[in-house]
Image 1 (spheres, rainbow, N blue to C red):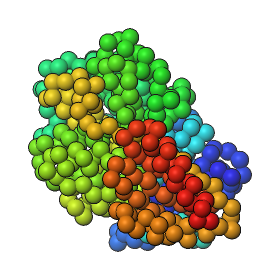
Image 2: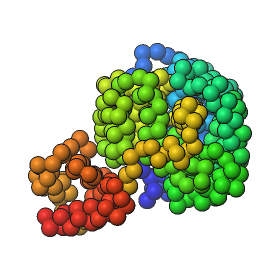
Image 3: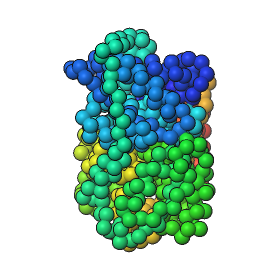
Image 4: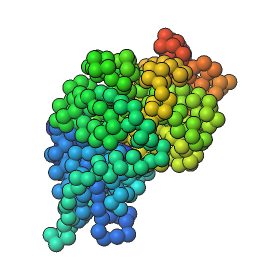
Length: 460
């Protein structure tokens, strides 16, 4: 079974049986549920939704199904075609639309696709709203429009231009400083829509772009999650081309990883750290990430006389806390930059522009910039438990066991020690506790994970 229904949307593998995989009927049912939910909650007759998709192979089919379903409900559709997650998020308020749907399975392999749901601000709908949409999908309480009241359909081809211009207009993006450096950038866009959008941005910034896997065919040449083990090709090409920096984005362009001039990973966690370092130099305020993100962001914020706060895992939780704290910068340690002066969504394009501004102004190489930040190493483990074991009870015991340490229960149990931390989160679908650790060396991070696993076993 590869159909996952959650408060943020629905995702699954294409083909197979209804309710088991992401079949055409599942797409229609879920699009109907979201459209109906909007109709039930908006006090207006004419609703408009913005849709856009990444380049994965099933995108055109899923887009056609979603479009026709929304029109069948009497909802107007503005179709951006091949787009990025942040571009759709930008265009919803730009077009004064009532919401949006992004057709992307993000970093999942090519057989996956998904519908991600946006409100009228171009932000992900809340958990409460998502639960209402799921309930509607379950009940199938839909009322489709009669023939004279079908929704209208139009396309827009200027969305990337609008998105990029908004980035170039940001006071903290110094276009002239970047142009003066003549940066040579190697880009791996995993044959999705970043291969269209990022070169357009780099061209406006006066950079030379060397393209790797930039044809939006949806045939991903490697695992599309931008992790070190998948990025050997770009690391080699950066060295061969004597480039200043390598840029890697995932299929929907909301995660940004960087490669230094030596062909070494900058560190996915450090994309946000570097951008925060630049922004907080110029404006004191709060920086936000989730509980499983690197301590390096906290250290950098404190070094700039700014505050740091951690939210529960999940973009919607980061955004909620950012708004509460009126944060200058936020995001997730997986390379997700959220810059509220532009919009409240992870955005690799604004991440590239802010990072290159920082690089230009610091007058350093990428490796020199990285060397200036605290070095931390992360470990990820899990412990599988038998179904009869109460996972919540185990987490409560761990909280009690370490009550003399700095413990957070905002999302699972996070224990902050003086020189390292561990974050325990239970799976929502199986009896597993996921264990995230961070320390000053990889060995120490891995050892901490093993020690915690041994402690959990002793408590069972």
